[in-house]
Image (tube, rainbow, N blue to C red; front, side, top):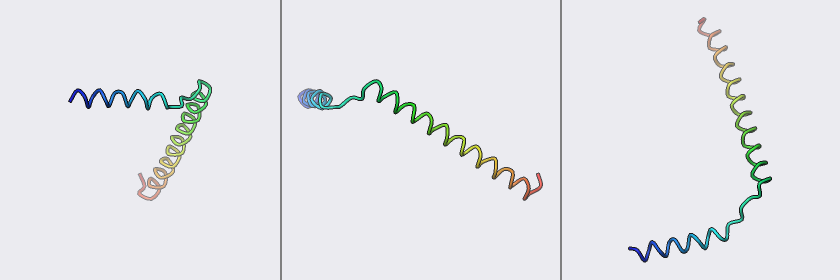
Length: 62
């Protein structure tokens, strides 16, 4: 069992050495894009939800 764990950890170390890590600027830009898209999508859902609420209020007279 310990041999398998040791082999696994060695392979993980090798794979982590092959990873191309993003630069600080790339990470910052990607994070900014994710935040902007998330906020835009949240705003879209908010607007659509309010439109449906308004239409159902008109339909059912609440």
